[in-house]
Image (cartoon, rainbow, N blue to C red; front, side, top):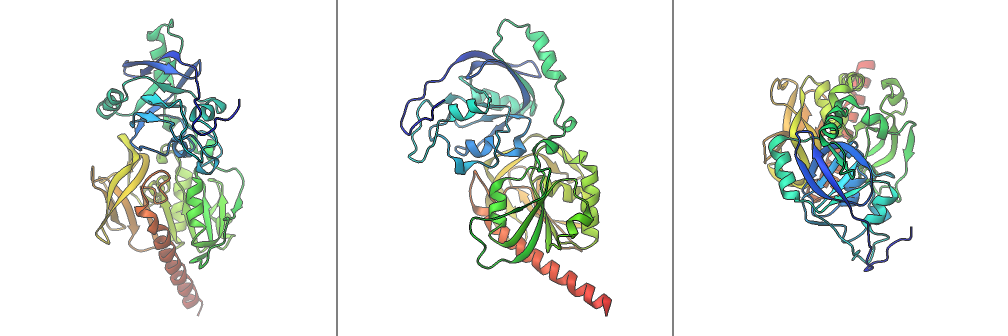
Length: 392
């Protein structure tokens, strides 16, 4: 299949198809491929950034509905990927653009999806579908081009699909072997010498921004022991984003609790934030339809500033049973008042639910990478001073 040049018309097949939600609601449209696909359906409110969304490991196992009406008009580019794989089960939109209009485009969205064997589902009323998800919540769904099939049986097949918390999604997307991440350009004035990054499905843009404030990044598998992490002699440990339910990662939670109790500076983003909360005694629960988009206002409680943020999560730290003696809330989502950031009161530990790196989304939160690094460096220095004092 040849690539599409900028401005070139890209014809694509249109197979009549049906999207069936687990509650029985049907949406007729068209797909670019023939077959059947299953996943949890969620909606994303970003106007751009579909390639970053497609390749974000946190979307593993999900079908993403884009609320913006036309998708694909600026094509795709290799520098816009967050991983080497398309992770979504299907991309759902009102209209798939047949024209690629950006000068930097390397190919069309249709070709990109087709090469990944992922369908585009289009021609439906995405506003109605979004309202349904907002009312009934994110749910299992299936897409089929077999319109002669028994939809009662197909609905049963949809309902029988494993839920996200029944799948090892992190195991599917995270690295299996440790590696050093090398930035294209070394940091001019690194704030940390060595950072261990626990990979739950990390986005490349997070590593890129971390590499601007850290000299050496070691990315390790999710099952890495505390002793193996500390063998790198890190100044701090970072817990990445990733897909699925954090409550099933009980071994990880215990290891993180050990790191925290040993005074190891630790911070996390998204899934990493949720795991830190669990390790500190908080509870994490599934949200009705989650936060997926680039327009979520978040209040930085400590500094009384509002950031417009990029978010992608279906779980959140619950206010019920929040361990106020141990943790303080540093950020809140202004749309629904959910907890969007925490800090430990005794140890150098902090995290946020949103994505400071954006990709896609606004850049309001990018200052947090330097802020976190400075806080972690201070915590590491304090820990070393305490060890020296204890030795004396």
